[in-house]
Length: 362
Ligand SMILES: Cc1c2[nH]c(c1CCC(=O)O)Cc1[nH]c(c(CCC(=O)O)c1C)Cc1[nH]c(c(CCC(=O)O)c1C)Cc1[nH]c(c(C)c1CCC(=O)O)C2
Picture 1 (cartoon, rainbow, N blue to C red):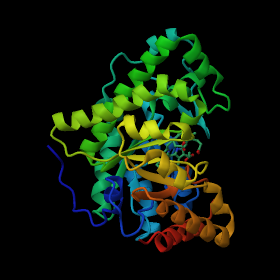
Picture 2: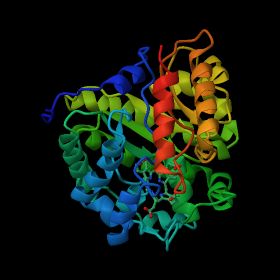
Picture 3: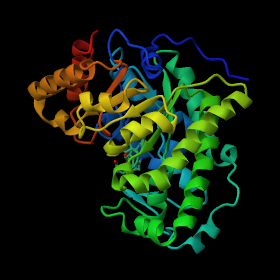
Picture 4: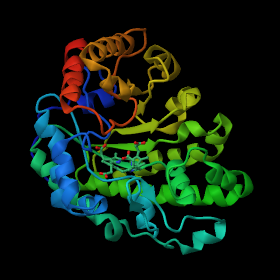
């Protein structure tokens, strides 16, 4: 049973995500709705971060801001929310001041008892679903709408560390001191992610992305042991649930930032259609690593956007050549290798998008 939405006018993203070569690379930018936009800062001056997330009108407004500003240049919208709404749904308090802060992180496995035994995502995160349905209607088919969640390992890190960490000492202490409890918690987070992503798809998300921002912090064998099973569980369970609930399949993207060494097995076993890469791997090498199994997304260093027009043009041109080169299939979604940062001039972002349009033509 699916909701009815206006027909999609630009399906470049969905075609590339399914592995098709496209006439040019679709392009969107992680954190495209954010503090580099004056219209976003205006909304944030009047409303708290999570108030924007929890108010479908505001979340829709902010989701559409970059689509309006860069009309005809962006090929996707991403729903305005945060990965940390999942720990909130599980019963944790999360503040944003200005970075994430958990007043009561999970210090030991005993603290897991403080989490909700059963998470009703409809009740806890229904506001995200409402925002997605509303944004999808307001987009009027201009571009597809992306839903997302954080990956279990990245969310686990925040829930244990209580903030963004440089060393991940607390999260890793859990892995090495309490391996079984860690695995259980990772799977518990994964189960919430499954319901959350299925709910987003049901509400109108046309592609979903799993952000594993701290994937690169783990040794490959630790990633394989702890992070990968939960990621696989999400991909296979979401797909199975879509069948059970009679919903059309949607492409799934995994962004395992920094996990370059694992690209071959992620492509082969994780179960995603698209893998996002950061700028620390050359696109030609990433292609070799994943073969023809998945589409790639990425990977310009976000700081290139601070380098002025000449640097932006040169680097985008190079990125396009590197993604289109080599012998592997060419399905590619252009993006930065991580989120856009607050100091970027919105006109430089526009120039980046224009350069992708120009240099990624088949
Ligand atoms: C690790 C992570 C978080 N959140 C997210 C990740 C994964 C991606 C990544 O690694 O960047 C994902 C995220 N966060 C946000 C989105 C919205 C959609 C988009 O435009 O991409 C998405 C997809 C909005 C946001 N989430 C946040 C902001 C800025 C806060 C503000 O408006 O005051 C935005 C626009 C806050 C946030 N939220 C988080 C941090 C560390 C911070 C503070 C630091 C920062 O600003 O980058 C957690």
